[in-house]
Figure 1 (tube, rainbow, N blue to C red):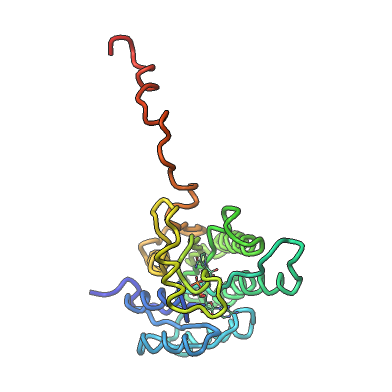
Figure 2 (cartoon, protein in one colour):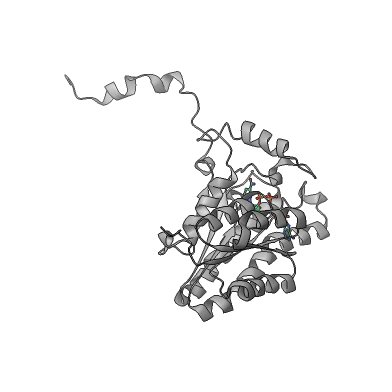
Length: 278
Ligand code: NAD
């Protein structure tokens, strides 16, 4: 039985860790060959080694146009095609109140979170147009849809990723290229530990303790987002483009349902609307 991505070639940025690493594993298990693109060399190489012949590591800084062009070249040189680009690398961006954010941190935030996605789309598009097929997915966030869940610039940058996804999908649809985004909620990865050098225990602490107040009662794990990326990358979603797929355990629906207050447990209001004698 063939996998859902048999014969496909994918480039995944931020694939040394968290969501990107898990997506690389899942894509490879479904038959894809994957370029693991990341700035973390040791971790990136070790993910590529796990994939055997289906994985190759390419060191990249996603802020650099030269580097982004080079990862597409690697896919073409190794496997002769580029079917899927997953623009996923990211970080938490500038923290703090608006008056304290330095201009250089503003630039860094938008370079890593938005310029990288723009560059990925820019350099994948000509190859995919030539093939008359392709699939671009970018990791946005629920922070691009709702307020109060992230630092200022992170949310603005992720909103920009969603908007870019929509507008580019309009342009590339006629070339049989689909362009979608994923909006994760809280996912237990090194990114959300708030530590400079997060350990596996730090990530496990988030996985085991965070997210209890979400409707599904747990934090997300990288597998949740990898499965969404697989859906968007595969033919199962062949009529979906320009979409931002929310994978968040329900938090964008609002806070989880509170304890039922006494007046809502009472059947009295219903009785009041029943006809006489019913
Ligand atoms: P992570 O820290 O595990 O992985 C991020 C990866 O991106 C790392 O391997 C890092 O080296 C790489 N990276 C960062 N800057 C880079 C650069 N300039 N060049 C190359 N590689 C770079 O975190 P994650 O949670 O897996 O994050 C993946 C994506 O998911 C990010 O875009 C993040 O904003 C998004 N996201 C995460 C969450 C969450 O709760 N974890 C929620 C919403 C969205």
